[in-house]
Image (cartoon, rainbow, N blue to C red; front, top):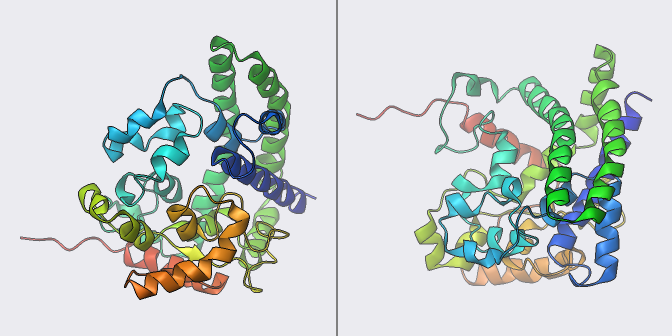
Amino acid sequence: FTVFFPYMLKMFDSRMGSQAHALGHLHIFKPTSKITRILEMFMLAMGDKTTLVYELPTEWGNCRQLINQTRSESQYEFYGRRGPYEHQLIHHVKGADMDHDECKGLMSHKNILRLNDHDDYKFFHKFQKHGIYQFLVFTMSENYGLAAHFVLRLRDMGDTFQLGKYDNFFCLFIGLFFAVGVIIAGVLLPFRNLWSLLVIHLMQLFVPPLWFVFYAQHDWGSHVDEATADSDWGRHNAETSMSFWGADARNSWHPLFLGMGGANGATLSYHLEHTLFPGINYLLLPKIAPTVEQVCKEHNVKYNKLESFDELKKHFRDNLKSNSRPPLKTE
């Protein structure tokens, strides 16, 4: 119970959160649809943290104005929450430069992991090539994130109340109780003893966890400055992204893809296709992937394809290992 219940609860939370990403991209319904509003309120009341990212602004205005900012400013959408659907408008338009990518910040856990040679090197990065270090980093940060989510929800309640969004405030209040339940199940139960942690680690060897699949979105080691990316948007956004083919029989069994034909609402699979066509429903991405791959090859654009968890694991480990070494000193 202390192992499987928290695992299934986190998977449920991940599946629900992926739908918030899809709603933010207008993949399912129009923003004016009453169904969209009902789903948003339901997910807020269920304690989903991702809904806070894509649906709750702290201020109003035309977020398209942010497109004129530098990427280092415009990309900090998640923490600022400056407008609904800003992710679609900003993140995917200015998406090639990994140095200021918020998803990269989440994946590196604010440089606890060094993902490319442009990141500052710290003494602890030499340990990142070891599996036990990776397990501890992701397990601790994942559970810290659950606890931090509770605090952020209190902040969001204050924001929505000041904005007069009392329906959101009420749903956030209900969601507090679910958030507490998730914290108890996701943080306290697994850490009751070392045996629980050992079993969780063994489970993750056979069923890749969310943080591992999250890695499949981009080639985190790439570096393209903003001016270069603007000169050929399609090429550079494609070449800095990855396409994990979830529809492959070796991958479609995973709880994050099960029942969706290998697709995922958060586009953890087929992220290259999602980067190029952010408005296309995520369920259609597996269908267009072969065409995107063919067109990339015809135009000499690098197509980063991962067909199995084994390939993803190798890519992940190779990157962490290569960046665990200190940079060469130049005269």
